[in-house]
Length: 364
Picture 1 (cartoon, helix red, strand yellow):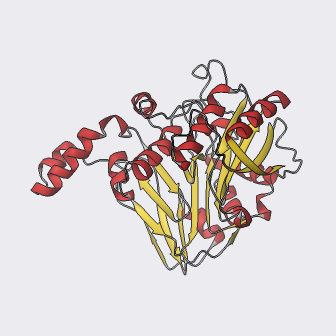
Picture 2 (cartoon, rainbow, N blue to C red; picture 1 turned 90 degrees about the vertical axis):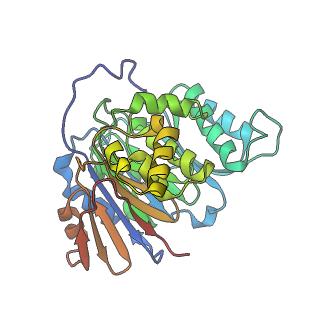
Picture 3 (tube, rainbow, N blue to C red; picture 1 turned 30 degrees about the vertical axis):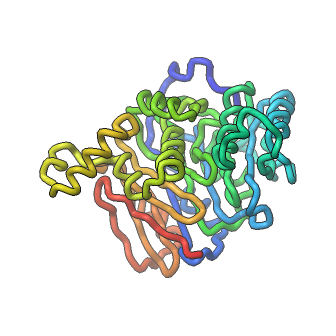
């Protein structure tokens, strides 16, 4: 599970990522069999170097606690990460994440989960609000403990990921035994990094999760921008910046999801010049203020938190994204075939416009 020392020095295995998401607007629980089958349908979009899922609504008995999923190389990593966690948080429950032996997964790290809340002890994070406090604890573990990474830290949700095809990862983590009202899935790995466990999709922070098909060529400037706001990128992949930017824009800066989407994929300057006065001022201000956070490169992303699912393409739609509806379920995927595999009869199917977000609100 250790990060490659020269993560930039490897032979690329170019293939097209696959992403899938499904949400019940009525918060009805969906069996993990559905996203597993949808991702298996897109098997050929992957190369076996990575897969993963995010699921919302899976820990209702711990809904007020943060579910830390931590992967470690060895017992030393477990001990060091637990020491930090217990120094800064109250651990209400600890357990190994349930797994099963599979032929495909042979190099798995130690994976544990902890249900925690911040403690009241005085420390260097005590001045922070609760959510900023949790983010700081995640950053501390990820940057100070060798071979240990927090790969999920939200409430009533969890990420499950690793090296392998998505169906292999699902088998390993026993995801067929889970039910959730939002699922997202991902096939393959970031284009510019080799396959390793912590570098797989989804990427998360607090309740945010992100899966991504494409390449974010602005990773360098995005990463430097985030460092100025106390987000430390430790997973060596382009997609990690999107999760942290979402948290910064929406939770900390109070922007709407629509505005966050327009920072990721803003109108071109010539389009802004043709807008009416109010829109011209708005988008000029967004591009001026958040220029270093803009995402360059081809991408299709699925973003989720406990109450929403969003799909977004880059400004010229260089990666596929399709949306479909059936009753209270909304699907988003790289391919229509994966949706038809799990729901053959659909009420509506369409492809979003470039740079225009599709946002699904979950009732309740």
